[in-house]
Length: 337
Image (cartoon, rainbow, N blue to C red; front, side, top):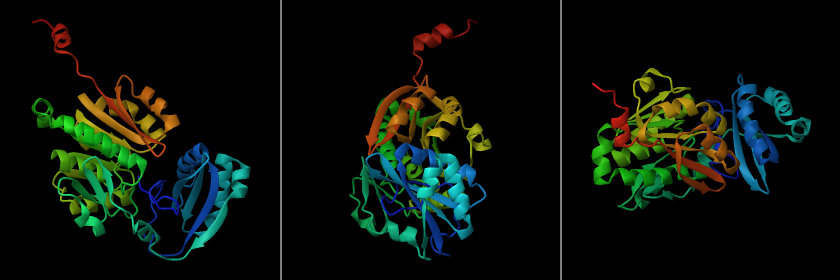
């Protein structure tokens, strides 16, 4: 998934459809609304379906006191009433009446919003832009991300949470016994890769092959650029996919690590296929969740066990593990000759 940046938080956003060259080309229109936090997130998901025939992008920025500033970016001025009607149908007439529109003149406003972002540290990973390349300590793994229109410059709590979770997981995999047992056949999957930051971190830290997917072709293009920029192209395969049933994924069962930093509803829909694709002893790192949504995801992914939970800026990252069967159980279960 990929963001378009708002004025409040450069990455607290979710992109819902492609806006080709929107950041640099023609004037763009924006509809703004302050609304309850949960309603804002539900509305963001619904607008993607209700306005599927329009180029839109949605950003959500927390304003405090349980509310969020919702901004919907669109290209055509005639889509104003269509947007108002969609918000009215999804959130009620009061929300539709409160919607306010403005015009953004042609400018690289996405690029401008990324200027001045400081490097983000998450464990031994440092996510930075090109202007901070020389500031990465020698004992850290630097990941250079020019995020453009793709979600994942590292500043958002979901991305940092996933990186912190992976840092802990990768340290356990570097232990001698764990390396001998796991690393020879390790496979890693990144669902909703966005900028590719998690796939790059996995490839750089473990030197293992990663399959990364996204439903957004713009995000796929950005991720491929970032993978090449970070010299990880030999290890990371990126493709456009809207499910986990592609030929490449179907032939690569038994993933040791799966990342899915997306949203509640896609995480719930993917629970069954992701459970089937995690290897014994493997972990699934899930994020894009508010605190109130975490328990629903934990329940959906049972019998996977909750290994850890990271909360940052109101967002939750979950690490779920598939337990290994004890050897004694395997011996008892083996058919007799």
